[in-house]
Length: 114
Length: 110
Image 1 (cartoon, chains in turn green, red):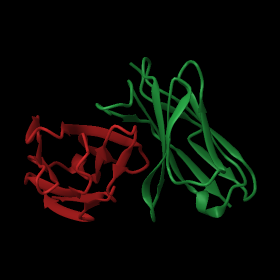
Image 2 (cartoon, rainbow over the protein chains, first blue to last red):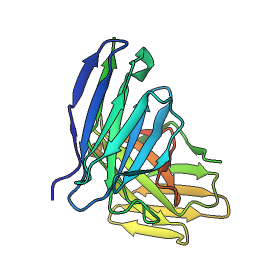
Image 3 (cartoon, helix red, strand yellow):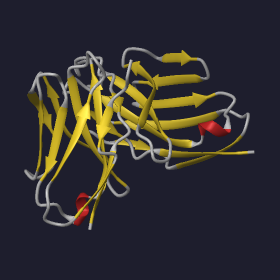
């Protein structure tokens, strides 16, 4: 069974631009979560989707948004990029995301904002 | 509270056992997890333990949970050079997210 895939793997953008990252979960998984990883803040939860509905959102500004499609694939968007948005963005999928919250992570998208 | 704390560094000799410790603060945590991250890679789920368990063993890995003290540990037996990585402790509740510690960098020396 294929693991969680994320595209693109690397991205360089300029301040003020916007970016869209994509995540394909493990087949059969309906929950997708997104995390931001930086050296200073560590791993921070962005949001979680299940059956196209956002069930929880972390403490990030409104510039960060996401969505999930009917096939469980998810995208996250960051508008008006800032230097501080440079990070590794990790996507995780799980069967249902509740209780037994066993989450499998993808390799991440490394975003660099210049 | 959601704070998860871990020591930042651990150096261990090849063949010895490694013990990585973690404390968490949220008594409503349902599952506690250990993830491994190698350079340039995502997070690999190593093992997890349900909050009503005390211990779980999985090959070279042993997880101990002291719920009274909110203390979690991961023991790696016969540590190998391939075990050099950053190890993250994480707690999960029924709110669909994980809260992570800062990670412990394990260095295995020959």
